[in-house]
Image 1 (tube, one colour):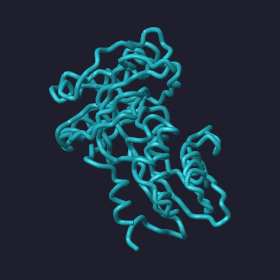
Image 2 (tube, rainbow, N blue to C red):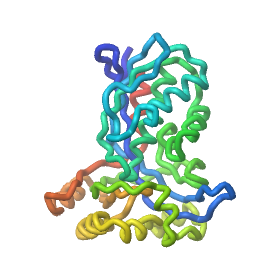
Image 3 (cartoon, rainbow, N blue to C red):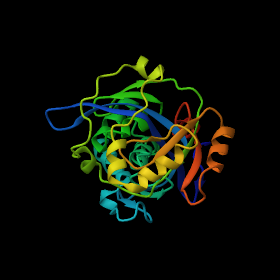
Length: 289
């Protein structure tokens, strides 16, 4: 069997990061959830998930995940438990999460970890659920999980779960992590957050007129570290914020240009280059399985 690399019973699966190329809030539902419009861009960089099947039905996290996150609250563990219960699976699994994506950065780390566990265990446990069913399970874990389950760049609406596949040109990104983590509920509750942006269309994004992030002015005001990183990045291009986190990025048309931009940044800045991809590397591994 060719597929994910096996080592002492462990299989290894990618959990790629994402960027929000823009993010607007257009309103709020009666249940309090905010209505969004955004474009998800998947990257060739992210976390790694290790899985080892168990015959005793237990789901266990092996080693640390995000600092301060208990195993019961870990989205990867919760994803395994949800699939196990939904598909009535007798087997269990050990889960290792090798973190590269900074927590609270808006790069989608926890959601991607959960999606990878759902997709990989669906194969390993042979539960036979289709993508629609897995995406529905993912939505119960978080609004960003379905895009990682589906594995394609997308225009997103609703709370982020209504996805339209979107072809994006090749691009490379200088990513930067200011190292601050502001809880998302606090940002949504901020009185300075714009919640009534006009509803846009995909054509507006294609024309290049949609680049802003509703959370950027809020985070600039709240977090001096974010303001400083955006200012540093603005010297090499159009600096943007991703998601509702503190992560920032600049887009380039070539890897060489991105590397040149990275080299021009202060050495103390936590920054690196990643490539945008047409589809998730998780799907490539799944196909080889």
